Image (tube, rainbow, N blue to C red):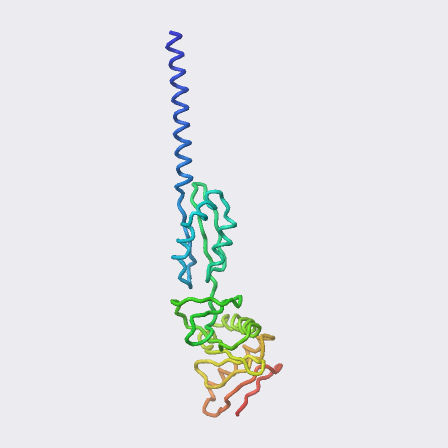
Length: 233
């Protein structure tokens, strides 16, 4: 009887060890068979899927993921043109999540260019991106581009101006723009007091729509405090 009892205990222990071993193997297998889920932004501007998929399938990045070195992966992905940042993390089931955030293009560098300026004044190339954006003259220097970006960001807060702004250029260090529905140029100067300048511009556009037959000005100047100057050349 004692022998039978010992045999039952031995079998129970063996079965327990076997179950533990199987569970361990399953967990180990799951760890290496983890899914990688890429979440692209709802409004994605740049075609980067091919690049990202090739990157995460590289043996180097597979090793980084297996060792949970997510910061290194985030830094590498964030260098991809058109991506502002990436967030990489692991779920409780072992799946790897990659959240991508796009840079937002604000303007073309010129009419036929595939180069775009984003909200941080970065220059991004994309051959397939088709958007209705204002054009910045190609000879514009870096500092003037930063000023224009500040102006565009404020103008884009107004739905009407977002659709109307056509082009930006520089004359004698001053920023100029024009609108699609009007035949006059607009001297903005720089981004200082840009909200007040936008108010004056919208007020003049409304006035022009009512009195266009009596107006023949081809430039308005928004650089003066508390007033707008219309110029006829």
